[in-house]
Length: 306
Ligand code: FPP
Ligand code: MG
Image (tube, rainbow, N blue to C red; front, side):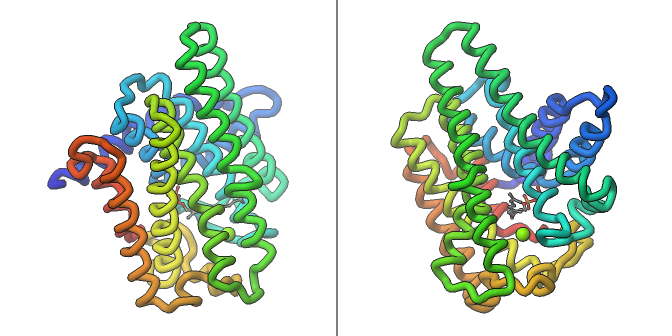
């Protein structure tokens, strides 16, 4: 797509505005928690998950931005909470994220733990509020969609999703990890959030069970390609480009796709998973899917250098 950069900028600005709109006000005796929450969300980030959600929603026929907006903010809050906790001294112990000092560097460790907790529960408040308002409007089909979206929003970041993957990741840091286990970690710690984003978009647009299942598979392939690319970037990129410390995996003695398979194979595997993702997208039954922004977005995501 010729105008991809401009289109991406437009979408990013749209997502940014929505995320900002749902941030809590920094007031009350407990305002420090809001400051810490907002600091990390406002630190930037590519907003990939909300953009993927919005574009999947639109590509599958969704038109009511009010419906998807709180879920876009919620997924970015959950993602941001996971980054705050991942950077803590007890986990990866990183000082920079999104080009800024990490939460625990700014607010201290205790407050960083709370800011992560706060973002997580606030995300569910937003979703539950939407469920209340849709229930009051009384359209049972819309209530069903929002309930399903909420279920995805609880399951995918949860113990059988992102947190589950992170558990194995933490437990095995510094220990030998084989191919099956690394695949499991990637699928859960990164894949699950990409899956949640796209599945919620599809579900709110009215996709049926089979379509949501197909979207889940596409998102899984994107997640794998995205995380393998993340491992590659940790080796070949720089803090200027990524906004976070590189060589972090080596520092933490982590098995990555690159240490396990070598750089050449890792690059090939990114291509392989991308091909699966494109194949899956074409199978979704969306007319001219290759011309959609979603398709171009997936292409860009997988080849990203930051
Ligand atoms: C970078 O996303 C993040 C990942 C590739 C996912 C890594 C997974 C975790 C950190 C899970 C941690 C979980 C817990 C419970 C601590 P990105 O490149 O989209 O970052 P950005 O939003 O800053 O652009
Ligand atoms: Mg980590």
